[in-house]
Length: 154
Image (cartoon, rainbow, N blue to C red):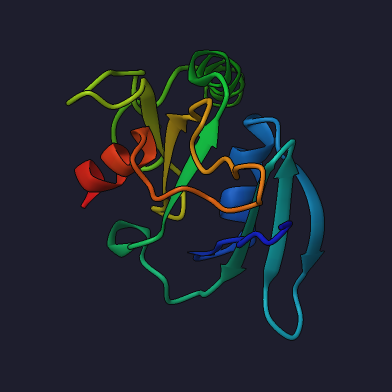
């Protein structure tokens, strides 16, 4: 199975989020202004899409994505270096911001990023066996770290 879902997140203007994600090492793969503002970013397996809405208020955003990655520490260091270069420091409060990696309630190490659109990217470690199909191609009932992450998020 090669199905996948790609989130489409809100922002006020595409130019609000573009420098932020470029500082994270994501590259613009598509951009349009008409008939509606729309932009796509990609980095490895991370694929994020945004739509612009002038009346949107980032502090009221409910946008949220869980990014499951093999090495949260390495990604954090790369993201943090890009943010320091772009902002002169690591933004740890307000919008945008990034939290330091943590371990909480038995979940894997991870951190959160809030982009200029107010969208939350919750970065967590991808487990060795999560969502892995067996020989017949069937995915076992969830019982791994992702379940704990989702339960904690809920």
